[in-house]
Structures are given as C-alpha cells and as structure tokens.
Length: 263
Image 1: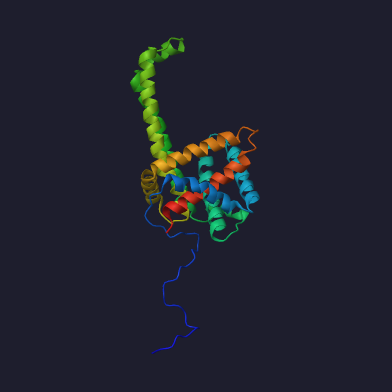
Image 2: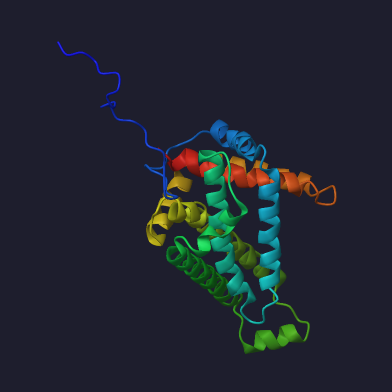
C-alpha cells in the first residue's frame, strides 16, 4: 500500500485561471429573466472601488466620439471604428475587474493593439450592414409611395401624396425596418466580447451573438426595457444620474456576456 506524499502535485484536474485576455467559452446558455435582472447587481459589485476609473473611461469614450464627428466627410466612419476598438477596451477593463479585482486606464485602449484586425473587420461589417439597410429602406419608401419625378415636383410645390395611402405604406415600412434593426441588434450585441475575449472570428462572432440573443430574447428584452427606464430616470437631474447609470450598465453588459457564454 503506497503512502501519500504531502508534497506531490495533485493529479486531478485543476481549474486554470484564464490568461491572455481570452475566456473559455461554451455554447450560449439559456438564462431566465431573474438572471438578467441580476446583471445589475453583478455590475455594481465589479465597480466597487473602481467607479472613478470606469466613469473616467466612459467620459473619454464620449469625448472621443464627439471629437471625431467634426472630421469632415469621414467623421461618422472614423467614429464607428474608434468606438468598436474602445468598447473592446472597456470589455477588457471589466474582464480584469472581474478576474483580477483591478484594472488600469490603459486597458481602455487595448483594442488598438490586441485583436485589432478582427475588430476592424467587425466594424466594417457593421458599417456595411447599416448602409445596406438604409438604402433598402429608402428604396422601399420610394417604391411603396410610387415616387417619380412628377410626385417629387408636386411635393416641392407643397402638394403631398394621398395621406391615407402614404400613411399606411410608411407605417408598414417603419415596422419592417424595426424588425430589421432588431435583427441587427441580435447580430452585434455580443460580437465585440466574442471577438476580443472569446478569440472568435468576426463571422463566427456574429452568428454566435445572434444565436445567443435569439435563445434569450425575452430576458434580454425585459433587461433592455429596465435599462432604458434606468437611463431615462438618471437623465432627469441634469443628466448627472448618468454618472451612476452608465458604469452600472457597462458592468451589467459584461456580466450578461459572462453568464451566457463563459464556462
């Protein structure tokens, strides 16, 4: 009978901390509405002692987004790329707060040096999708309302198309567009952390995000409604409440990603 050596390394499987900015992901799990409501508390817990860091980071994101909009012709385009990279950095910040208990302001810019290529491709895909949807929407409006040169000339003269027909057609187009934008939201909701932390390619990340959001559509819908109400209430006192609401929602977003995907 062999004796146990107290200095021998354990032979059983031992959990290994995640390293290198990647999470071990599994198939997206189905969560409940109660789980979704718990994301707010989990986000608040990660913010303990780190409110200043996250608030400062969010202010920098807002200021940079505003600044690039002043660039002639390409401001909106630059903004889309920069925001994708900065949001990846914000995700890394919360990953470190969750796994290590601390983070640095430099983490906000991690997307400019880590996974930059896939993130840029993701931003390009997002831009292309929105462009196609807007073009299709405009084409649908013109087709449904039967716009032609005579109609446009009449509208310039102050003569509008038949209100009942145009109203119903526009309502139908708006409804279809709403469904399209919901679909786009499902595609991109989890895509940035899936690329940055999950090491997935842009196409795989979009497919995985859509699958996860569709599986948890009702909890995400309820969570989105509560989050929107929180932002509305926080905006009342001169928007100062957003200094509390936005960091909380950023933390809740990371918590949602972790609960749905991380093993």
